Length: 378
Image (cartoon, rainbow, N blue to C red; front, top):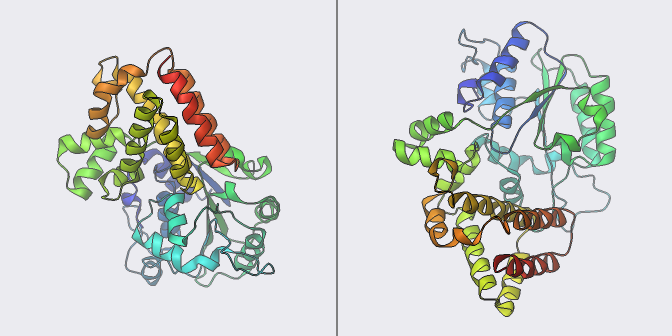
């Protein structure tokens, strides 16, 4: 993995390279930023650079040494990954779940590319409605791995993906590990919600905040990597809102956003017609989705509310919609106005919070659609 393969994020790349060259790399780094901005890609590029024995003059791994050969398959003995996992049904209560229980699935996913999200990982694990967490047993495994002598005589690196999903016991044990790190060890934490981490852990890391990928960088990547024409790439880059994952989802044939748009259109039409019976069926249908998918769908609804409201101002540069979304907005946008846009946004935000707190989805969604009726036709 090379730094040049990380889309945009030149400031973050330069900062990391400068710390490495000046020999002031901390033992724990916290990469923060929104989903799809390239945090994991940058973490993997940094690990590849540090583990390579022959750095090139262009600040890239040599791609020729034995270490680079192992890194191409992400099987370097001094590189460890920690990530949230599920506890499959039928698992013995005595078994302590660790990341390595899903090592095969993880390796398959990261070899496909460094841009992925929790939904893709849940799908890779075959999760149903389960939420993935980093269990307490993982911290014991980390202590064991990082205490071993480096097999290649260099750094021992652990990339912790979504450390905010650690349970309390695991977080406290990790704190002790980074307070007294083994010799030549480096922890790279890749977080989307750093505020959920223990303050004591955050205070012992070098935090690097990454922004959304610039539209120009996304557009260039879509043209060079996906062969899109400039106009299509520009529209897609704007809609993707700084996320390469969203850009790829928009290009995918099985894009969930197409389903979410259909469900949004159906909900709004049924709400406008005050069709309580069909809205109840709608609620039961979306209640069957996994919780992560439900939250993602609600976030998509929240974005559509904003975009339809902005569409009323007839300022194209302020609107970030696909052609399909815009086709629906032409007739629908007038129903989202100053009288209800704030209430609708708050309604969907509360639903996201309730689903995240394991509320009954049937109750959450049916209550939500009933309130949409009132807000839409007031």
